[in-house]
Image (cartoon, rainbow, N blue to C red; front, side, top):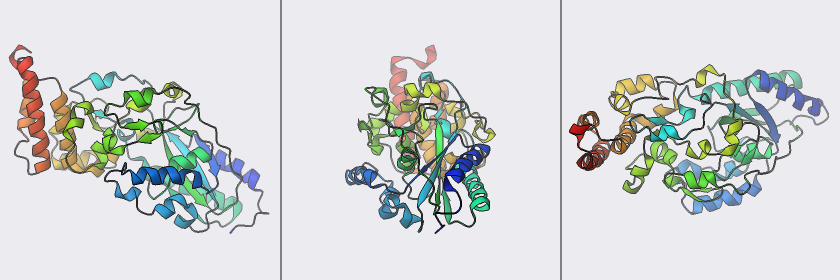
Length: 363
């Protein structure tokens, strides 16, 4: 454990913020490791099975709620945020473009995990140069860490009704990362909540995943259905998914605080392979090798080609009827995966039902 008398930790905290800015973080905050006030909410959420098949949320519960058990000796957590928005427009109109795939904004560019973790390590090295040896560990969504709780405690924002961290000056289009350290740095004060009576995020959710303010049933969330779920998507949730094939941004797009969001200059976050405006049929035609090649270094790759096709099949079923869409779906009817075949059959039924009302030949 570092000595509390040397160096000047108040001055060091100020320098840490400067170094963080130099490394590309838009904000740096410092919190203690007491997360007791968040533990009750987590335990209730888990007991109601709102985490669905995300078994990792229930594992290492002790470490999640007690950071010093995840990293022995931890006394403070340096929390950082990095803006990722490249659009600057919070219109919901992309969800009305039925033949265009909607990919959550965070996943359109390169995966942020390695890049942010590397920069956190560089931050730790600068701290080490100034303060001497210290015990640290960097995390970016890579361990049992209550990152939004920590960010809220460190003054980076508040956990909004949509369960996202919201910042008054930057909205919610940003990633979070943490640096656990044994240095007894001065902590920052929380900002308080500023959602007021607004419930736009709760009302906009296409699948009705919010049980109430700050309470999400992940099993109904489009992000869970398209990313975490590995089996069949419940039929009653398929139509509400619309054209969303990887994640969902609705509750952020509607949030009034995101009018203050800033465009990121990070080149890694620029959309790749036209994923901000790709045709569903084009993506559905990707072979497994093409999928692996084009999603290299992307957060999308973790769902695998089968779930990729499953998600797009649902979106094609929700698309306006056309001969081209029917042909695309039929091309996957004999896919090796029963999961893909099931969702393709459902999509074909949707297309044929709509085609009965709007004859394809008249289009």
